[in-house]
Amino acid sequence: MKITAAIIMAAALLLSFFEFPFSSGKEGGIVLPKDNSDNPVIDSDTYSSNLELLKGVDIGKDNIKRLIAAMHRPDKYHISVSSTVYHSEGQKTYAVDGYVDGSRSKTVIFGDSGKIEQNCILAGDSVYIWSQGSKTYYHGKAGSFTDDDYSYIPTYEKILQLEDENILSADFSLYNDVYCLFAETTDPATGYRNLYYISVENGLLVGAQSFDGDTLAYALSAEILEFPSDEASIFTLPDGTVISE
Image 1 (cartoon, one colour):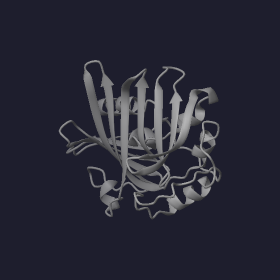
Image 2 (cartoon, helix red, strand yellow):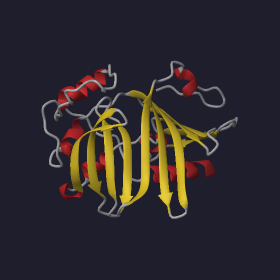
Image 3 (cartoon, helix red, strand yellow):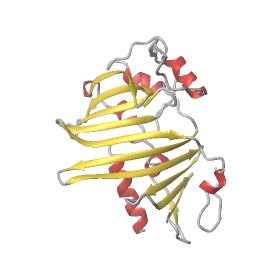
Image 4 (tube, one colour):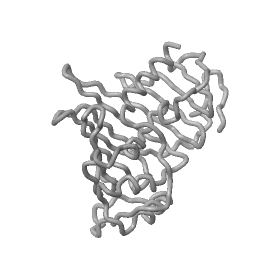
């Protein structure tokens, strides 16, 4: 149970302004820059789908929620997330890998040394948690926690829940060589100013920052990686049991 509590607490910290998977739709639009010299190489059905949905519409704070709600993300992906929390005494960085495959997901949590410390698989209403190298694992009900909570998969449902006056600006942006929808918001509870960068290629959040006034309080960077070919090993428990979808 101690492991469970630790993961839940860490998830709450890292996902303080990310909540649930977003809905999909068939509305919205942006126009990509005409200069393709520095464009990343993109060959993705998801990208094509999002681009078609977003074509020809000017982005602004009045329609950013509708555009975000229209985005699609793949059912299967591997995401690497680095989150840094800044405080008066310094900073703390958390590194997590997430694997999502339909209804099952896995979280791999790294320690300060860069080595894997903990693992978590969520499938349906079951959660499996174990320390790296352990022969045993915790198995229980997932309860109200989602695969995004356990997998640290950054989402941006919170933007959709904001009142219009809490959306400060929105635009199309190039972030770390990735074409993104950009949204700047203010948190009505804390007053923090939050920035979100949502990839047009795959509909996933690839960057975020949170500011207390002019002071950076939180930063997140995410990279979408190739899903490993050996899927069974990813979703295998310490006793050899493979968790299926």
